[in-house]
Length: 486
Image 1: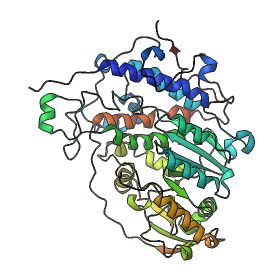
Image 2: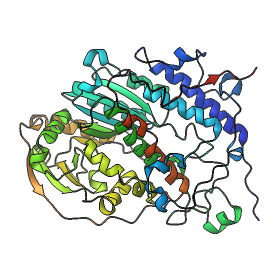
Image 3: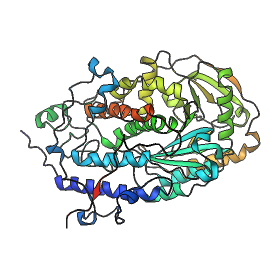
Image 4: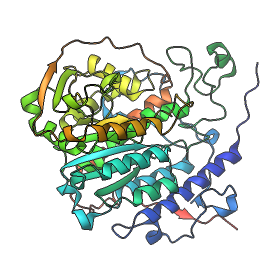
């Protein structure tokens, strides 16, 4: 018998301490538009980078390790018992020491500040919503924000940044935005906070490439739930799908319904995207004429992966209609609330499909769960370009190369931008065969957390209210933070 790895409980304590420092610092984001933690529980400013517990704060009560927190998931979620979302909320239960941490983030997200509201008006007056998923590539994020700044009509937008990492430098960049309304939200169960417990990597978890035979011998965490290929989860990759799904649920339940924007389109961007000056202009035209172009299309797409840009200038007023396919149409998707509800109705499929990629999971959902497969109207000359040559899977790269090329392209075709009318020049019904699952999502804990995030914010959707004066005290308790004993 191979000995089990020893649990490092002290580092878990540090993680919780660091997490609480996150929330104290987060309060600086809130401004005067809504109550903050400083208003409720005045605390000294904390150094987020400090690793000394004496400099931190703890949740009221004792810190409880994962080993002291026995929470057993079912062996499988295939039972009809889990067809109803009423059973999903209990599929993720953090260690007790982290429950107040999650409540604190929920409280801060719910009491978000709408920046630049005095200048541009209440979010309910926004014409459209842009949601940017952010991790930690600040240089790419700066480029995206700069291109958004120069997009004509951007002042009509509500711009939402969804973060899975607390980084003061990134927050400073977002705070400087002055060209539209801005909201920041933070993915609660992120691996910065939950570093040494699930959904991060518990020291006792099976390593991703551990053999199933060895995992069964050592009984490492998740040993009985390898993926399709006999591999085990990697928290940093799992988080991408978790964050995407949480973001979608929170935006629609906690923002769109709150501000009466459910009929508006949401454009989905990422930190390494680069938009054209007529990005808003083209998007609004596509929305306005979508029912003329394609009444049965559920998705608009402003990004596209071109092999070359030789015909870009001649195609700036042209659209194509295709069956939606993940590797072609996953960039700068735009959907409305009706489409999202159809997708969310397939939450169990999405959350249990063995693929750590949200877009490939969505493709399988489209093919195997939706009543009809997703169809997309796509701009043949993309108004959003992917410039993130350096990312999750690529490290040998030039960070500025693609961005410089995009900048040069838009300058070169400037006279062809802002078309007065769009037209469909290509219609295809050719259906590409979906690939096999990529794996990385066999762990029952990931599946349970995904479903829990589907149900977690339904109370917000069931109790919509306009403006920032919504009373959330009955839904999420204020955070309880106290200094550590001296």
